[in-house]
Length: 590
Image (spheres, rainbow, N blue to C red):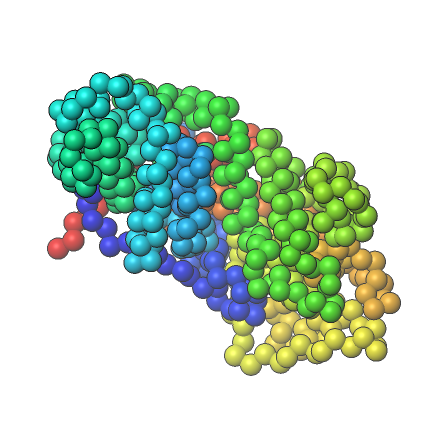
């Protein structure tokens, strides 16, 4: 690589296990940046629907209005950097190089870390375990060498003698290496790989040019797949560039665009655009971005699914899903697997027309015999069928059982976990710190027919608990129709469910009857749109916004609203803006 970066993967813990429910990812709320939920505007505290930003839940948001330029497009400054491929990106890259049989190999790499709440964060390095696993991936992937287009292009004359084989190998290494590293190889890199190739040819018995060629190319492929330039993609600009800022090379721009939208390396058409220099303006980038979205809808759908799963921390393998078997015997491995598949199908279907409004309000999902119990249905078909659910009970991703169970305890629902999730994920606010001494929650009292809401209310009536809990409990209470595995209920222990709540901490604060009403309100709230833009920015760009980015976030929010909340258009805007190719130059280490 042109420059060594001392990148260390950071796993940032949420401030409190009590509130975060074990979610080790950080959302990087406004307490870190000073940005309010509307990109610098006043954040509402829990004291009232339009309270000032000084109460709990405001997390230090500035109350000063933004003074942004009206004509120029706001700019978000990004430093020159390198970014490690995620598991999904590695999977797609291997498949493009060596065929679909290599996809599963990416799962042999250690799980993605979440430096900024997302696997795409740029503060991720590699561990010794990662390096060891990558070696295994390279060895296994090279066994599929015959599927590479460059290998198929080799002709019979390549096997005549060592000289012919060496000439063919040179052609292969140049072409395959350019695809693997997403740019043309330098002469020094070609020379190094030729040396590796020669070592491979020496590993087989003399006199068999065909075997020697295959062995040499296998060695070269393994070396490429373990290269730092393969596993990291650069955003450093041209070698030797000077000045306060650098411009990405056309090949870096192509990779940034393609990985952001479809989690894949540039295809042949995009690479050709980069090679011809026709990829250096916003219009050129936008045209290619739209082409990629149209050409690879399934890959965009997987990218969109990954974003939503990471944003909302939907994970049926998390500790929250180790449900009490006596209370929830339905929560079998097959049930949890079906909920996970339902989530995949729901999100990939949504990604065909990915409006934030649809994500939060659709009553369509996918049901089979294994997840039917979550909906009170009895089915015999193993296949998942598109199903219109009761719109009075289900509204978008927040009422999916996989999400609800991920935001619950193992033995009960949790208004706190669910309310805090709305506060952090949709309003970009952080809950106040938990006091040092917190009294324990009263145990479930089935003899007294106490509901979960009543048990939590007994706990939060304590004076010093109220200040914190009033900033998220009203939102969490609206989910009380759903138990710990996401089933809809009208009673708990014989008592009627009270799902009344409110959206608080928002300029759209208002009472709501239940989670369906809350989801509808979230879909229309301007500060939710602003927070969603910030979450999408973190995932797509791989960094957390700063105070200096407030005007850029405000401009992007306006664009998002103008585009009818289309997530594709938002992601595309993030990687095709006028400053998309600009990076702040790195300061060399002394």
